[in-house]
Amino acid sequence: MNPVTCFDSVSVTHPYRLVGPGNNQTDLGLIWRPPSYRETGRTGGGSIGSSLLRIPGFAIGYFSMHVRNAVSTGSYGIGVRIPNQYWLAGSWVEATTTWGNDTTDAQDAGGADFALETTTNNDGHIIFSRYPFNAISYDIGTASVAGAGYAHDFAYSDEEGDAWVTLTNLFVNDFGTAAIPLTGTTAANEALLVFDVPSRWGRTTPTGAATLATDAPVGYYGFRVRATDAPDTAAVADTLSLYRLYFLTEAVADNGTLAQDFGAKDFVMAWDHLNPTGELYGDALVALFSTADSGNRLTVQVRGR
Image (tube, rainbow, N blue to C red):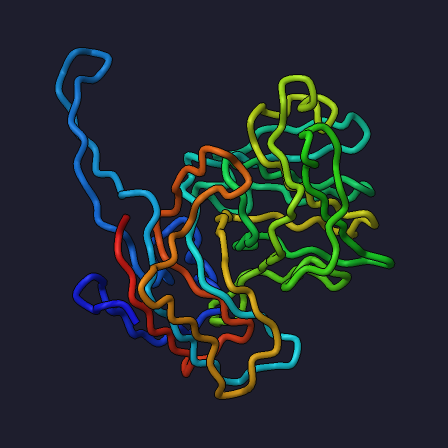
């Protein structure tokens, strides 16, 4: 274990699956935030202004997740939240292969204003991120009514950034064949998608973005969610957030632990391992417990980079 004087030592209970219902786009449900600094400069009008910024990325020396009420299909991991300035989100219309930028509604606190799908087969939404992610948490403002055959599929932009590749075998999939429920007040009720980061995921390119979707941005990792068999009533989100999780593990035993000691070297997260420049990103530490329980506990040594 690393010397504790190098790190903040955090040991907390974590009653949520990820950040908890209604906590997206807030600082609730987070484990830790890196140090902040104030940047001062002149505004466009010439006056001097300042803004409070978080140091991007951080490192952990050790972590241990104590799991209560584990289930055989449960998934667990630790990671970071991706800041809003690095991602976009909007609607996907299959008939016109068009992406409609609705990032403001995806990131604000407005009620039921980000459409996740429509009542037309194969419509849905696309998220574009400057950095790889593998977890999405949604606060649902309008629940779907499933109807017969309700189903979803998932795809990511390929290595060349000009075609969709189907993604299967998600760790957590709350967009299955059952209705997507309204986000409530219980700790268990947040809608999640969690998956492995595809090894051949690529950013959109100037020539390839338009083949993914009309009006798609250039230089982003794309992730598409479609209702292949549309619902009778479409689900609508209040807001959502993106995360990059590490050490995703299934089937931790009840009252067991998922732990890792990095010894003399700490583990840096998050950085874009798919991109040669390897930029650091992430503005908060988070943890995934498949089953929400007030007895879940996380112990971690963490420091800013």
